[in-house]
Image (cartoon, rainbow, N blue to C red; front, side):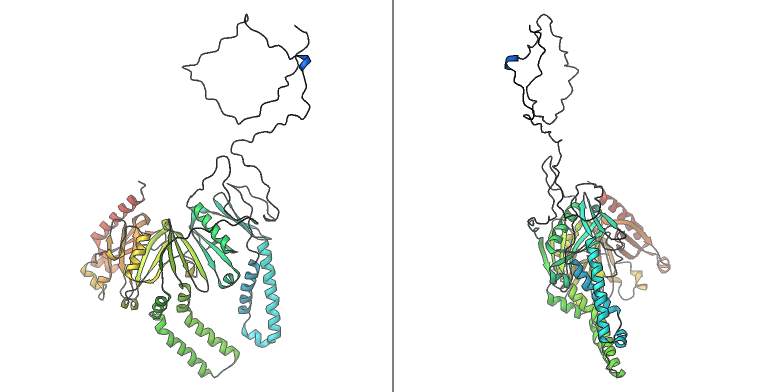
Amino acid sequence: MSDRPAEPSTVPPASPTPHEPVPPADPATYEPVPPADPATYEPVPPADAATYEPVPVGAVHYEPVPPVGAVPYEPVPPGTAGPWPVPPSGGEAEPRQRLHPLSPLLHGAKSLFVVIAGLSWSTLSRVGFGWFAAMVVVLALGATVLSVISWYNTGYHVVGRELRVYEGLLWRRTRAIPLERLQAVEVVRPLLAQLTGLAELRLEVVGGGKTEAPLAYLGVADAARLRERLLALAGRVTQPTVPGHAAPAVLPVPGAAAPPAPTPGRPLHAVRNQNLLISQLLTPQAFLLPFGVAFVVVQFLTAGSWSFVAVASTLTAMAGVLLQPVRRVLDDWNFRLARDDGTLRVHNGLLETRAQTVPLARVQTVRATWPLLWRVNGWLRLRLEVAGYSVAEADDRNRPDRLLPVGDLATATMIVAEVLPGVRLDALALTPPPRRTRWLHPLGREAFGAGLFDQVFVTRSGRLTRQLVIVPYARIQSVRVVQGPLQRRLGLASVHADTAGGSGATAQDRDLAEAWTLAADLTARSQTARTPT
């Protein structure tokens, strides 16, 4: 045996493989390996020096294997993120997206109207048209510059299950909106946005006092894609992913091809614009409209003033008289209703189009209303109450409560069956209150009623304008029994079924014993409906 020391092994290391843990041995079947017999032990001979060839440095290149589930790092291209530090993400982070580059121009145009309205007509008469126009231009340019700065410092992206919106220059603000609290998403297109091909995305969340995160403005396709993604995340709809890789982003990447448009929902009903116009003519406001216009004209003629200020004031007063019925027609023009899985899709509007998406799981009540003059044609309208929607909005057009602006009973029955499966609007037989309630309702005791059905609690009220309220048992939050002074003398009480929206339904003037029984029955049914099966 040679005295030459053994040379180091020249075999290149094997390519590393992902680590697979070996399960522990079963103690019942474990048998220790006996030590080697010294008599039969043969040492491995060293490598032959004559055939030894050292491997040159750099010939073997070791490539570490990334851990299981790791995602290759891809740097964010410059220009796609804002000038803010990246916050710690609670999920898969994305590059921040900016609003559309035309957003400052639209905000500047809106500011121009505000500036003109702010400068009174008396200012025009004092300084003259030239100085007045110069003031308007200077203020409009200033508003446009501020809009550009605001656009540059505004961005948004989805982090995990949150939508984060960043805004502000001196005082920066970050709003994180949990998508679990999302109630409804709508795409609004004012007149200027329609002319430029843009849209505004508005979000409503649980407990919000106003519309959250109004992203104004985005491209129409981008707004639609973002709406679909937010609703999917809010409904806990997950996309299939490849093990060990991240899910592909749904939001558009600058320079990449746009994904296909989402599949439209199943159409339910489209309101005829002719019926919409006739229904607005059969309202008290329409009957009082000629008297209001005549009063304004008489006041103008008797004043004997044809100055610019007098003409402008007269036109403003006439616009106020015409505003309400005209606004209803413009808001509900081309009203279309569709159903897509568990959501309702509402599209309406002429000068300002709205595309609202309301999850059916958030619907608290359905209200059917029969105005007095509509009963000649057998027409009614349907409204929704959505949980957590901001009831503090001054403009009721922001609320997604339109279900049917005008229609007949057959159409309303079909729509109610889509929203509340198993409920037929034309087959709800209600029980009127006791006969002694004629002392409280001498002209229409039969106009009131209440009833318990398999899935819903239904009440009826109103004399001139009839109203029917349908509340699913699972949406009832509390039950109250209320007695007034006259009700106590007559042995009556009213039962209130409150919902998360705040209004609910009320069974008015029931017998006292019946009221307590009804309240107990409602409590039991609501608890049973909320119990998971």
